[in-house]
Image 1 (cartoon, rainbow, N blue to C red):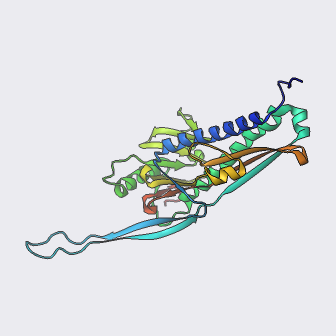
Image 2 (cartoon, helix red, strand yellow; image 1 turned 180 degrees about the vertical axis):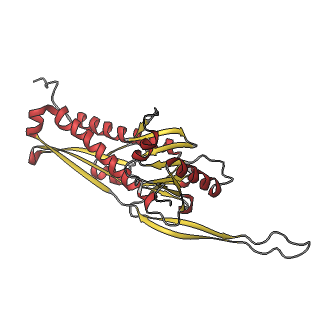
Image 3 (cartoon, rainbow, N blue to C red; image 1 turned 90 degrees about the vertical axis):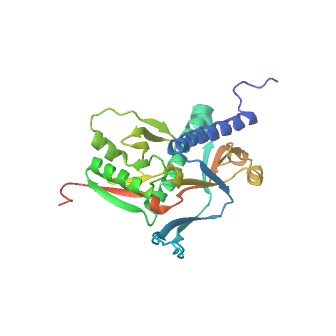
Amino acid sequence: MAVDANTIKTTDLVAQSIDFTEQFSQGLSTLLNVLGVTRKQALSQGSVIKFYKTEGTLASGDVAEGEIIPLSKVTRKEAGTQELKFNKWRKITTAEAIQKGGFNQAVQTTDQKLLRLVQDQVKSNWFNFLTTATGTTSTNGVGFQAAVANAIGQFNVVWEGYGVQPVAFINPLDVYAYLAQAPVSTQTAFGLNYIENFMGFSAVILSASVPAGKIYVTAPDNINLAYADLHGDLSGAFNFTTDQTGLIGVAHNELLNAMSYETVVTTASVLYPEISAGIIVSDIRTATASK
């Protein structure tokens, strides 16, 4: 007996998993390229990531001929830690929902929503590195433009000699309040809007995860990505489909005992600064608050 062309087969389930991981990884790769992140490190789940701050005292370099050169002192101190752990999500679609709305409507469309929710959670976790970092460099300015100018000024002091352009993370309400009706060209990556080559920044990431009234600026070289590689034993044990990096794992399974169809997603990643003092935080002040 010939199989109906609309019958969902095992190969269709694998294709669905591949599509999910490709959408996730392509959007993520674009975002990381915009940020200028080049250091991506695969670690074991449970690894503890350490953040550091550097302090130093430079001794006088005015040394007479033949005299002992005094020692300068530079120390690298731990500024915080974060554990790399898995986040896990699961969604179940019943047979009745598939029968009523069709496979595409019941499963694929809700998978798209799940993908956006997972992206939102990953982004929210990532931007914690901005708001929770200790030992950051602070500045402020009256109004958006002054706050930006002072942030870039502090950036050029902190990152002098590195020859890099800053990247900024700003709440979209602050940007559009400043721009008002002025046209601006935005692009999208990993569910985030960003602006390239704007006000002296190589890129400005717009996210509601960034507190309104604050501008975070740092160098691309200061941003690192650590993640748990889902290739290997873990992927085999749970039949995960992964992207090329192994950053995300997705599995689609038939639950025959419940006549349902299951989507499981897992990932473990931390975006963190190499040097917390290399993050400049600029507060947008009002004219009234400055008096």
